[in-house]
Length: 263
Ligand SMILES: [Zn+2]
Image (cartoon, rainbow, N blue to C red):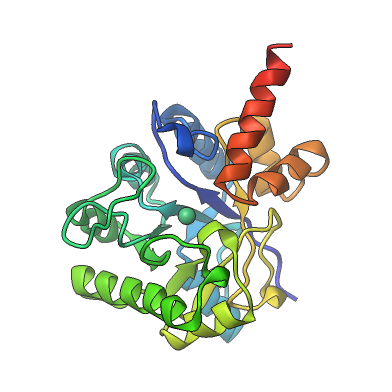
């Protein structure tokens, strides 16, 4: 039996993220504090590919493995997270929606300032695995077969073209997948994929449905400690579960939160 592993899901890192990304962003100071906690407690961050490989081959894992993952490809990951990761020598994984990134393949529609490909290459050069997160960030389970295939394959081809290496890890936009989506991601050449579940990842979940825990703007350092130790139960946990249903729900919850706070 292999021990469960916390896979942390981050989005934007920034001082003033756009409204649509605010609830799921973290402040640069909070991110630095969280990485300090991982170092202090003896965690060893791994890439997604390294964890999946170890679980596939029953290989050894370091003491206290943890995954640090970023979805979508926000510019703040390069500006604020990269220096902190480099300082600690921490591995991470960035899942990019290729049509959202700035530059040659951009389709627009991104909710905030995104990375350009030079910044993505710099992250890759510093030890961050670059994975796929679709091309235009749709709910993949809602697409017809043809569009599902093109969203997945196009993402893979663009990352391969820009980085010169084939991406092997994938994260489902909004965490949504289905058997058909998982089959398609596998057929496109990805060897593992991450969902959202606000539970620790376990080998028995299978390589295409590994669960992650959400780190939010409001995640305090004590709650963060409980998340990585797998002890985040109760109300905060239930709220996280609700938040991962999608950005629309996040925005509604934030409005409700403000209404409560103003009461
Ligand atoms: Zn996303």
